[in-house]
Length: 250
Image (cartoon, rainbow, N blue to C red; front, side, top):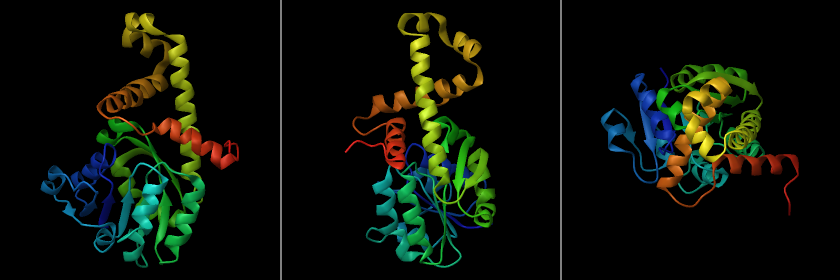
């Protein structure tokens, strides 16, 4: 089995890395705040930089908040690219700019390594359950080589197209999710929603709404109550949609 690396162990990354460990994958890990004790106790090797992860892994996953964070991981001081070699694969599972993704992939390929973009949907609940939807962009043979690892983290894993296609698909997914959330708010506002409860939500709106509200929206609201600042994934993806289509206001 391939040795894996994981960079970014936040709300999404930590449970995803844990699922790799549960399936017997040898894992090297890095995050700026330090690798959590429960992951090291489960067998993860804590590294002190992205470059150190590259020295220990065949496939390196990245799961960080935004485009500048991915660029820093890849090309910053002691960045991943400085330690890459031919035969390795970088898999960015963050939700970032499709245009930046294509640029990052080209720069990584200059090192001899391969590159996939593989953003996810399913939220913290899906990350913990190993049931994420994973939208992948890249070459077929590279996708095939990483697919067994994807299957440890997700249930619906699809190669969408060339590098960047996964990010484009994620933008579309987030726009749909945001529109669905708004529709729910219009259909069941305030007190009627509280009175009807989840049974009515499940009955009236079916599996899609259950996934969006129970699996994505509620965990996101809880997360945002625990922290302050930053932008939500849906808002960020809507901005990325404007940038990729040239509609962003100057």
